[in-house]
Length: 338
Image (cartoon, rainbow, N blue to C red; front, side, top):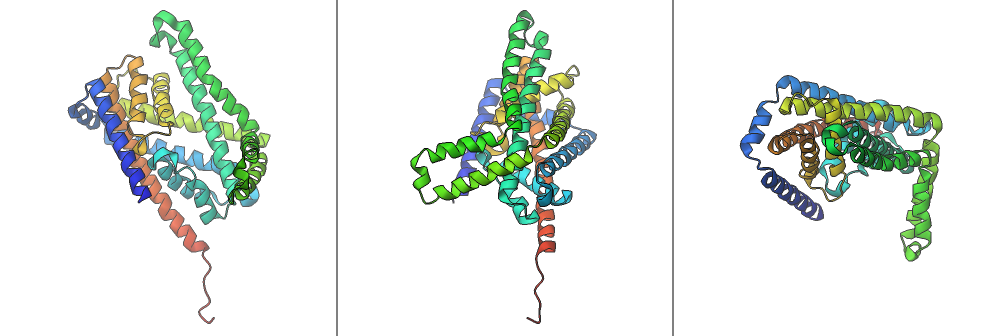
């Protein structure tokens, strides 16, 4: 019942946000149908191919951030990562993020703290690259965004890159997050509650896992994988954006800027179902700032989001099917003779 209520609220919020965006931009369903009609099968196939590359790189990074002694085969990590991405994308308020820890433990026997450490470090790396990418794209495109005030836009770009720099620092000392959380919990009355000791034990074990996962060699390779991963993410958006009808002068830097704002808006914990509404808002604002007509920016944003959701569902279902096969292979066979 609680899940049904959360899902209903999530769908309702997404619907309200999309309606407000359509009213604001003067969008009609004809605009959306036109953008969808322009999306050729070749563009969809190329987008799915790039999307598959993103999933492969993400699985490689999750595996790299796991201790070698607990690391399952890559195909098992890929299955868990694909299923996790579906849960993280569809469930409201990012409640599906923790599913990776559960999946890795059930399919690959990965200890909970190790799985959580891999997830936390991956997200820190994503934030570092994303914010630096947004800030860099804004600084590069300052003459286009505000020709009359290039210096101020570049300064804003540097300010946006600052959270990325902080996230990059935390990647080198990720255990600071759990140590701060443990210190806060120990300094309050929460530690006296029945579940307080269990939470503290989990925090302490995760701290150790983060320290083991954050070695210099592993971190350097993880940064390279993250850069390649986000390079493909922006390529994916650029391919679909052009396919849906954005102007020909929208190149890779412009796609990075517009899509980055869409991703940043989608990070908000108040987002609706599958990020509908918030992602479109960021997409529209980003590309309108570049000079795209509001109704074109919004219609292409909706179509790109629908294609992305379709890919996520396909890969997620395949991941769940693969997890089921792997779980049956790992299950012990009972002796019929007793």
